[in-house]
Image (tube, rainbow, N blue to C red; front, side):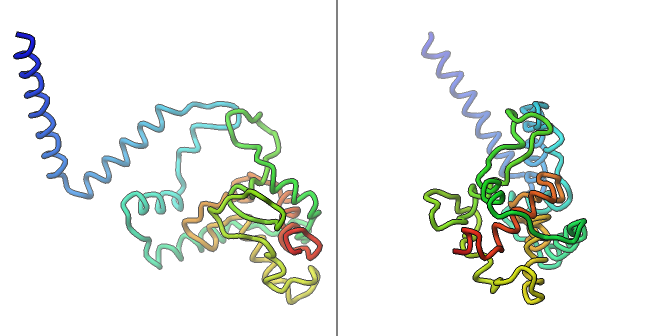
Length: 223
């Protein structure tokens, strides 16, 4: 009797599985993708909670992130026109240094680049964030371990011909680097790099220290 009941239940489950797979196969791709996006967002909302520096509101994507994540989840590329639109909109958010000075202390920039604190459940609200640069980039020839999600930044300033931070020749590189740190999507629509200035992750003073780390000829980055 148990064998018959088990066999019957297996048959029912098998029919349900076939019906489910058939229904999925019949769904239009657009409908399936939209539903998957909606279900995923719902699961994320239920799984997160406010905890110290982390807020559930981070799940609310701005237009730039939404365009990119939607395209990536569907395995498609953004059009060149859409990329340019996103980059142009993000470039508008870039704020130049209030005092006109782009540089700080490269030694403090080195400490900041290796600091992984900030924006997690264990971080207190108001605690200064680290740059976490070594999670994604090589910066120093002496660094034994570093991330490779982003390109190597070793000799960043040297390779771009920056030998004098006050030279007019260096100005385009300086302004580009500041804008990239402030809002990385200004030059790469779907960049995964934190938008340090635009999102208030780092202060202007902290960004100046990173600028010095990247561009000062005396910095370990440029040795």
